Length: 115
Length: 112
Image (cartoon, rainbow over all chains, first blue to last red):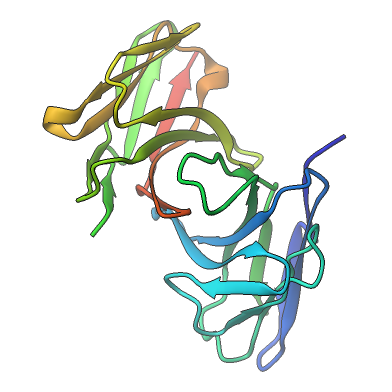
């Protein structure tokens, strides 16, 4: 089945620890995105990538890092610099990020909590 | 700056009632796209519709309909004869460049 797979579904982080959230897509989409969702708020863009080996900061990139070494993979690392990481993280992809009309398709999300 | 406002935080209806979810947007662009997504309890956002700013015709898909009014910068979503399975969080979004800006979402609870 084609789609976007996020893992793990639940993740716990200890103080001072970096954790990495996985996002894999087999839709052959060029662009990939990471969003953060907090209760009562919409989705906020963390990072996005339109092409392999290139990515741009979104609105709330501080405390996060990404890589895009393969077209199908866009992992997100939540670093110890992110002081309030507890949230629901959603990964999305679209066919061509540079074209305004593209639809983003989402994974099932990873819920990150701090121990 | 682009902004999307969904003023209704939460709506509760009884099954078979019609319900309208409001969306107001702000943009300086002359060409733009608007979206609605559904987020069921499972968490994954499901795409519902995309609308080009040049197309102001209303759209209907089964029990769903959308009213786009450029004059009032609104893109409202109506569910006719609501069902319990419609219970979810609904997000309106505006595309700019190659990114989406989302509203805060409206929680819809449909009771049987």
